[in-house]
Length: 529
Figure 1: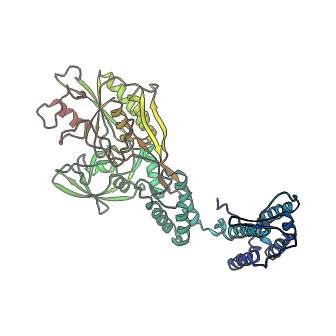
Figure 2 (figure 1 turned 180 degrees about the vertical axis):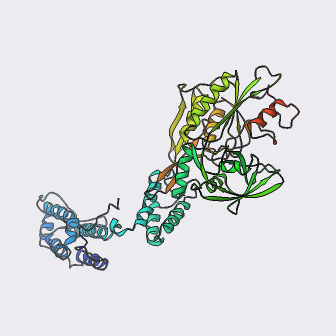
Figure 3 (figure 1 turned 90 degrees about the horizontal axis):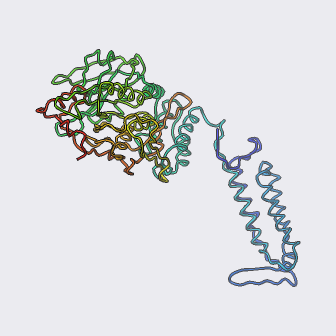
């Protein structure tokens, strides 16, 4: 374990106690600063002005001997042999410097021995003061302390804001090790969570072992949960209210219980979702395989109570279909692609959907990112490259400014020319916002909907030695137009009708039915103005 690099005693058996160190500190000061009567030799010429007091080398030679300084120091070192390694080098260098002054000839002037004594005293006191500080050794730390330090170091190395929300991160560590109880694993977890809360960053968070395992499996295409994709519903006044079911995985626990898209989750394990963030709700729905979760669901005018047993479900990040619009010429066939998450299969799944739709003579596309809360950052970049043959995708920034630039170079482009519409809403977050912002700022797509979530930060996951982990904000990002969307979101080019459906079948119906309140004019759907 890395420890403080300040001097430490060589041997615990040879180290004086804290009390004796304090006494040593006092003795050292007295030995160096003990006042002595002024000594003057015959013929000693002093030049005293308000600016300086200088002696000639003759006076220096006849003044108090430098050995006067060395004798009491040697006595100290003989009593405290453990300090010899720390102090001897400094002492010898200072003593040799004084000796060389005395032998250097009469033509040079030097500082007075009094001032030399002062400097040497300061060196000794500083050396002893440094020696009195000993960072906690690995042998003095418990297993729980070491786990806490492991979490502290991960944040120290990776966190994007090096002011750590305006606090001394090192001092927080020292205080926490001294004050916070860490006798059990639960207490240590609580101490880590408390430490992270001081950053005032909701996306830098602690992950218990099961949550870390579930998060990793989710990005790999499987998830241990109830098989629900969730998002923000729209209340009558247009503001988010609770958590809505977007889709239920076929064959999953939720679908078997009769939960349908459009249903509202009122509570999870008796915790109301009225003001619950979708990230928090998603974490509560996930858990160990075989464990249970208690849901209160409003389906239409009815409210039901269900208990679901979590299981491993396979996540398909893409759903697609072709919408054929009667009477439309250039836009008679529109390819609809619903991207629900950015797991490691996302980019390839989008490519496959595009190729399948093209085989059906699709000439334009709609990419639906509504209620896509993000996922893997690299997948977002790869999907942007599918639609763009050139241009900046995103700027990665830290406290010093732009750190990295991701750009499209045309190497992975397969659909850079067809008309494209992107649908977003309040549930569009993180990697989804990077993608939507890139397509909008490069004028590659027309964006419809409402302002997105506004998560302008990027996290990395760090595993700890006990199987738990941390999600740590490592950077913030700006769109190609240098827009910082944090807490603001991507602003769409046009709104969607308030009754616009969230599923692919409803989308096609709205385009076909010109009398429907949710209808969008297919002929003008892709126009910029």
